[in-house]
Length: 255
Image (tube, rainbow, N blue to C red; front, side):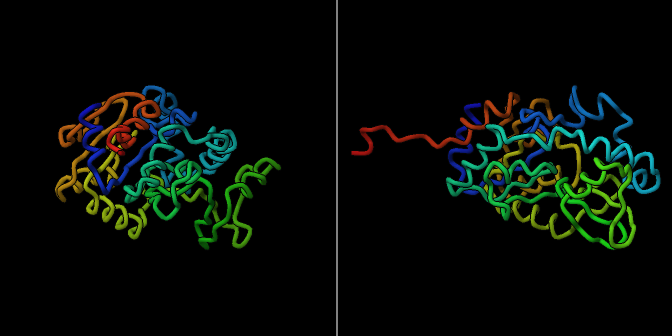
């Protein structure tokens, strides 16, 4: 913890890479952890596969039911999210590259232009045929009204959340922005991510090769702990705020 604090204190350009672990204290379960969505219900992983979602109406119907009940709609940012807002206010945050789709970084107060959502957002819905986009709320209202698999009002195509599923290509411009943020920092702060999903996980060795130090804050070990200058395994909402806090000069030094 002390080593991580010293590294972050000296940093002037910090890129944060966040995963599901930063949102668990907001009541949103992760996917692969001991209490993860897929750990407890392996069948739920099917909904995250593009081919299953597009080709199986029952998978889509189950997905819409699960969306209605998602704890993410009522979730609020926690101290971990707010710590990254503090970094931005200090003028030291390059970007928040997030694998999350919950928009809690923006709700906490991070500038939307600094948040790079590599896996998209659950707050928008997109038609797979005509690419029309709309707020997710509109589609959920239709589900509540009785539509179990709402279709695009413009062309009748399949509606899907504006998130990246397994088997779906990531947006190249978004990935380029993420890579530039990793190359352009002097510290990469990986928070709440298992670092098991690429290309996001690849930002760690990319930053290291570009001369940045890596600090990992996660509840469990990751495949890239060996590349880190410091690893902290603890509650993110408890340890991240003191990690990013700048020291206050003693009163005598202000004279």
